[in-house]
Length: 460
Image (cartoon, rainbow, N blue to C red; front, side, top):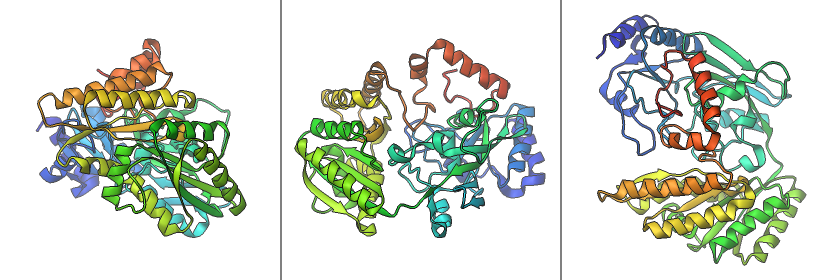
């Protein structure tokens, strides 16, 4: 173990006690996320409970040039939590307090380690909820902020970018700053909140988050319909968005993904066909009107097998199946690794992107179900990696084709998973060399020693 790490451990024990550890099992647990990137062991794991502890530890790491990799729940699909240069894995999962709830103003302040599910459980009796739903209940609010996450209902409520009002951030040198506030808008100074939301732990550690909340809708209704072709399903999604129907969720699953979900989640009365899951929020009359309009549009595109669910148990079963889509994919080939793509395109180019991806998958000979939040043009494939020697290379080649098409269509290599390790090579093509140089300059100013989550976002 490097002398610098030993010095930090000895010094930090004064204020962290046994919460700084070199336990082998904990180091292994913090060596990777839910991705295929090779794991790398941190030299030590630290469990912090306050902003002050984070700041003191970062000041030490800054002094001794020791890398720090923030860690929330470890659900990253792009290698964000892998400590590629060792050092400290900074675990925020014990920072789970709800610091304040302002019911009249519909906002709250939380510590970064709280999960979306924990927050909504706390809010249950207030008539408010936090809507951003990345598809797993264990994602932390800090991790969601750091990756600028979104999810199934971003089409109605927006992403973390729109729903984070302010932050507390511990910087690389141990300084602590507060950005934003409780108001919905401000025209003063640089928007540092937007800078840190999506910075993936490369500029500082987010320790507190001020969030926008929403009233629980009077009525909710979910539906599923199926289509003979993927083109029919995509055309339905495009038409619904262009007509301005305010769907709360609209999730597309191709026939391979649907078959996987039926088997994994034990869905009944559904066929393994191309499908769209819908959800509508609002008053009873508004939800009914939205649902009927959506059904009409879908039927014009050859939809069949409509099933409506207003009962909470039925709705939850349907959306749980969607949330389990990644695990359902992986269950198709137990033991296979997987690569999750995350492209987004303008809604008018969605058919070109998805149908082109379908053709690429067929040509590759790989299994890669398609699923996505098509209401905002974002979709994923889960590429299952064959165990053969060339399996990983074939999978990455397919990934690059999908991303390249999205960029050609005016899209982005990542709609919600972030850059991490997996999307670094596409950043210059998407943003341009000069823009990337400005990003690097910001990184240098805020993290001159390069200790904050090194190796992420930038290639070098």
